[in-house]
Image 1 (cartoon, rainbow, N blue to C red):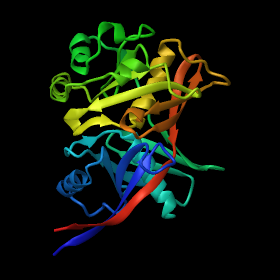
Image 2 (cartoon, helix red, strand yellow; image 1 turned 135 degrees about the vertical axis):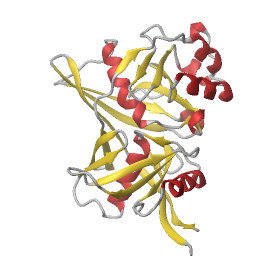
Image 3 (cartoon, rainbow, N blue to C red; image 1 turned 90 degrees about the vertical axis):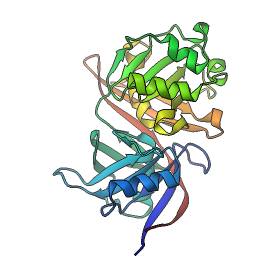
Image 4 (tube, rainbow, N blue to C red; image 1 turned 90 degrees about the horizontal axis):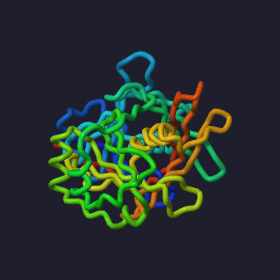
Length: 299
């Protein structure tokens, strides 16, 4: 006997179809097995598919899981969470402006804020950590096709709590000229237990932006991620540690851009809240648009 699963495809961190980062969303995943979720994520073949189920832990509204096309489960996925909150709002299943998700990475708070230009979805994960990267960066740069001159001198490479490697780039031309060897990069990711490789430039396309990034995770089935919300939760902490952010009224705010090199421009709103001169909380915001709805048949 076959079953039918209702599914959405949503472009996150954009207000226009075919921009930002695509995510699959399944709202009624309570009866799905892990194997079925893996198969659905592979069939959708977008950077991540989100699965929503009833919460099983007190203090949480819903359970949220994310899978990549390669079948790997993520501890935190920003763009698919924005997509999920967008669908919950659009289908009127979100009865208040804030939802608390139980995820593999812990509690994740999400707020839907109405604005004159539409709903802005804010993610508030646990405060990320960033530590100086202690291993040799040379093999990574060689695999990405970056020369020593292409590395920015404005701070050092760092590893986030999600094990994303942040590398400063000298400018936009460095990001435009990247030529990663995906097979070698995948092997490096597996060997060094790095989730993703993110290069960040302080030179941007938009005057209103502060950073421009590219993010690669081929060993997760994502050769290049168009717009990564999770890594942008860590970037403000990294910038703060480098002395490159200024907090006004206790909050440093900026716009970040990613995805333009793939023809899928995405824009993220980032906030770092500071207390006693140290990062206290972070928020990453963005818009989303539904591009596809349908039914997926399972055997």
